[in-house]
Amino acid sequence: MFQIKEVISPSVKEAVALIVSIVLIISVSLIRFEAVPHIPILLSIMLLFCFGLFKKVPYHKLESGLVAGAGAGMSAVFLFFFIGILISTWMMSGTIPTLIYAGFNLVTPLFFFAIVFVVCSIIGISIGSSLTTVATVGVAFIGMAAVMDISLAITAGAIVSGAFFGDKMSPLSDTTNLASSMVGVDLFEHIRNMGWTTVPAFILSLIFFAVLSPDASMGEVDDVAFFQQGLLETGAVHWYTMIPLLALIVLTIGKVPAMMTLAISSLTAVIVSFFHHSYSAAEVMAVLYSGFVSETGVTEIDALLSRGGMESMLFTIGLVLLALSMGGLLFTLGIVQCLLAKLESVLKKVSSVIAASAFTAIGINILIGEQYLSILLTGQAFYTQYEKLGLTGKNLSRVMEDAGTVVNPLVPWSVCGIFITSILGVSTLEYLPFAFFCLLSPILTVLYGYTGKTLTFRKVEPQ
Image 1 (spheres, helix red, strand yellow):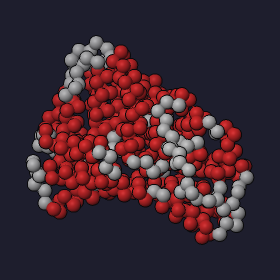
Image 2 (cartoon, helix red, strand yellow):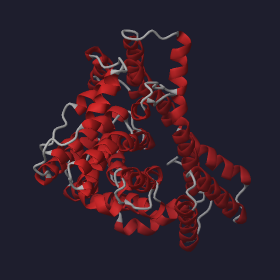
Image 3 (spheres, one colour):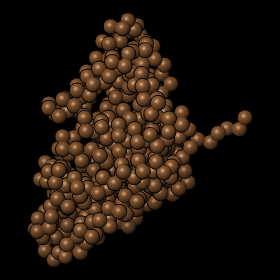
Image 4 (cartoon, helix red, strand yellow):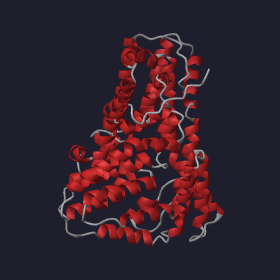
């Protein structure tokens, strides 16, 4: 997409007017009418088409820009399909249930907030979904905090911090895959590079939560015991279910391409699943496409374990293709180039470009309330600027996650903010000061931009 040439040169006023209109269309639709983002993006595409036709741009050139934009996301589409398959097979094999069970073994009243943070981090990485983590084990921890008369705001902050750490660093997460594929960076290279900001943010958050943890008595831990017993009753919690995870780690260290790594780990998981359950070929095929369905009869356990499949990725794939198509039109009509040219004078330093891209991701979260768009639009807008300064794509993908993915739950009217508040019963503004990981990540990414630490530059080819 980033090679798409503009066919017209709009004025700055026209470019700003169109961007403001698109932001209004999307934000009003998401916040006021609670629409899924696909519809307002489609309306925005139609607005751009109308502008192009008004400026006498041939229809076929607009259509070509649309298709070129969508084409930039095809590698991501196939990766998302494999992610869906991996999640469903790890559920079949018991890999994810075993990881969750192990995480619950850490829970004690001592250092309660720190333990909540760590356990939610483990589960978030295991399932690759922050909101699922919040809606399941997060609810259990809030219940425990209420019984032990511990601050619900800090507990919620620990839950959100852990869940979004897991979402950010999990190879199963759609936002992690989206950020890496958006700028053409290998998934695991992207995750490794995020460690430079994520690990310090994790350690600092852990320290803060440990210091804040009260001297709590054992109280009621029935929720944790309930979850553990439910997981054991699935019959899928065994030591050997870690084999697919081990395969993933080994292949990642060996720098095997992400798609092959996911495929091999998924195949390993299918084989492991036969150690404790006999699936027919038809059942395996159904799970690969539609996802794993837990049938323990316990609502909370079934909600936690019923996930994955190619079908589960269609929502994200549809959103990615629509957003990239809109991006293709924005480039074709010269809107992005026009706005960046206006900022060219202040975007000549590495520090200013990283800060500008970080604040753009944060601004999109605040204005629109959608984390996917904060990643997509930031990547589209700043890829060329990073190239001009010799910065590799993984620098941009890291910023997109540090200032995009983890900021969304801090916005009261965002998709994540609204969901978390409704599930935990703690308002966004109450837990915001204690969501340390989410607050530290954008600060560290901007700080590294100014110091130049951990940044990677393209190697200059010898003449």
